[in-house]
Every structure is written in structure tokens, then in C-alpha cells.
Image 1: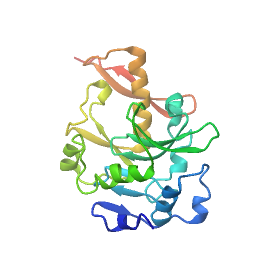
Image 2 (image 1 turned 180 degrees about the horizontal axis):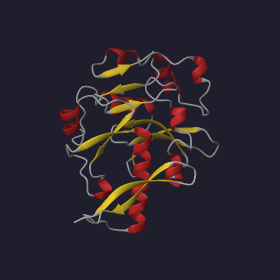
Image 3 (image 1 turned 60 degrees about the horizontal axis):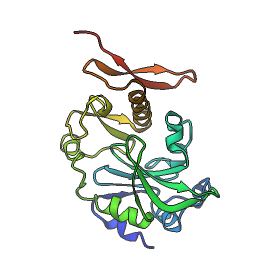
Image 4 (image 1 turned 30 degrees about the horizontal axis):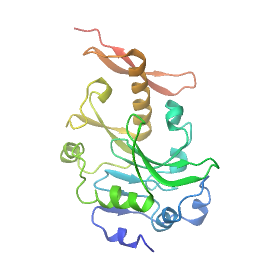
Length: 229
């Protein structure tokens, strides 16, 4: 199998294979090379938790659940439309396939940044594995991740690294002042707060992130003001 070498690559953690029954639950057709990887390992992590490739079970993350509208996509429905997310980095940047006009997945991989903006593309899954998984395996080359790695060590695959304050409130991705947040919560927070920036415009030193409960009982985020001097 073309991915056998990954199990012996330092810095890459593989798990048990996905079963054919689990793979049959995928609602869309995947590139053959991607299915071959899942038959060997039902997801993986690389570079001390910097990169996570989702599976179809809970060993790394269930990508079917992750792509469900009510997981986090409801917070940014227009930006997430037409994409199937199958991997991410620890800052919450997502790797996705695009749907074609027939509802099938294109070969091309799109990287979507924390603001859910498509930033760049890779031609296929094989190139993604080499550039995003193997390349970062022993030492992630992202300088924004280095302070976090020094401070916290390996990042669990269900957590995102979020600067404090949040980047839309002036936080620095390269800062060592970070916290680990549940990945779903972090995605909702990113979507809500960037949407708030577009709504309210500039923020100042008194602006802060606050939570509220929406009409469906979901915890959401907005920008408030701390008026204490």
C-alpha cells in the first residue's frame, strides 16, 4: 500500500484502520488514495499534534460529525458551503475538498484559514500528505506554532490553540499567551467573532469576547465591552 511508510515515519501517529462498514457511512465519494490511507489508519496526527487528518471514527476525529451542519458550520454557513473538511492544523485552519456540480468531490485540496477564507490549494491528496503531514512530522515549520510547542508540548487532536486575546481582538498567533479550546467551540468562536468584526468595525482595548445562548440553545460568541477602568 502506498501509505505503509507513514507508520514508520517519526512524528506521525497512526491508529487502528477504519472498517469497510465505517467507510461505507461516508456520504460522498473520496479519492482512492484517501480511502487507502483510512483503510490503514483511521486518521492520524503529525508534528506533535500540529496536523490532524480525520477518520470516520473517534480515534482522531469523526469527519462525518465534523461536517454536520449543527457541529459548527451553522456559524458560517455561506463560507463553509460547497466544502468537505477532512483535516486541520492546531490553529484551526482547515483542509477541504470542493464539491463539483454533480455533488462529487474534486481531487484538489483547498486550505481554508481561521477566517474561513480559501488561502491556497494543493493538486490532490497525495501532495497534501507530503506537504502538510510528512513535512511537519518531526518539526512543524510553522513559526506561529513554535511558542505553543515550547510551552505546552503535544497538542491533543480535539483541541485548538487560541491566542489570548483572540486575534480579532488584537491577539498574536505567535504569542505564548495561548489557551487550548475544544475544536468545535473554537470554530464557532472564530466564525462568530470575525462576523462581529465585520458588523461592528474596529475594536479597542475595552472590547472583549463574551458568550450568549442563541434561539436553538447553542453557545455563541459576540464582542462586548469591558467598561471597567
